[in-house]
Image (cartoon, rainbow, N blue to C red; front, side, top):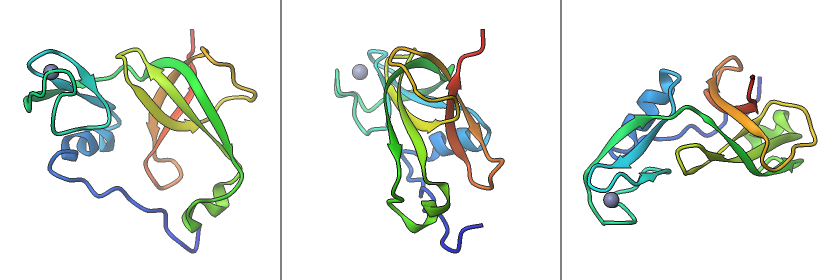
Length: 134
Ligand SMILES: [Zn+2]
């Protein structure tokens, strides 16, 4: 257990539904109710048509590796016990990018099919990616 706790996201009215779904183990993506554009992270306006109207759709969590980085230094004392760890940026099948903790083997390859999932086995809710099972 770390002496310093990890920072915990503070939901706002705009992000509350996202965090509520995360607590249930679901990734949801904000989707424009006017033109259907999927946006992630949650935003007030659609970047394509400027509509305020939106709904939340479930994401498969499936996508391909866009990039990754190996973290050797903790940016916050709460993560000191975790280093080194790998963060991966994934192009989700729904057309947006997601950042998560890599739980597969290294080295990674760009374009690798991956599956995202929430996990709270270490006490904090984490968004993880691992190779997609066939
Ligand atoms: Zn729109």
